[in-house]
Every structure is written in structure tokens, then in C-alpha cells.
Image (cartoon, rainbow, N blue to C red; front, top):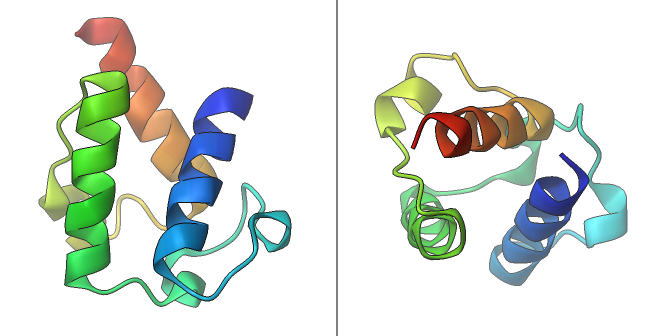
Length: 81
């Protein structure tokens, strides 16, 4: 999870006013104040890096609420891809 977490932290830091060091696995995604365009940027970056398609319904339904859950989401789909 470390490489996935580091990747997400760096990508998010490029999008919003958060330093990667401030983000932990239990950091709520809501605290990062990502907007819909940020999620699209993350979707493209994750697809390019990991060949994983992100389903936005998983975020809006409340299934994914933290950075750690986001990492697990990506890694679970990498295994089955």
C-alpha cells in the first residue's frame, strides 16, 4: 500500500492545498476538499499509472471515505485486472 499511498498523496498535493506529509491512511477524503474536477484528474492518473478504472459511485455512495480505503480500492482492482 505504501507506493499506492505515496502516489495518491503526491497527486492530491498537486491538486489541492495539502502537503503530502499531512496526509495519512486515515485522512478523510472530505477533509481534502477535492472537487469533481480533482476526482477526474485522479481518475486519469490512476488509470495511467495502475490501469485501474475508478467508479465514482463508490465514492458518492460512501464506500470510500479515507485515503487508506482509496488505496485498497485501487490495489484490489489491480489484483483482479
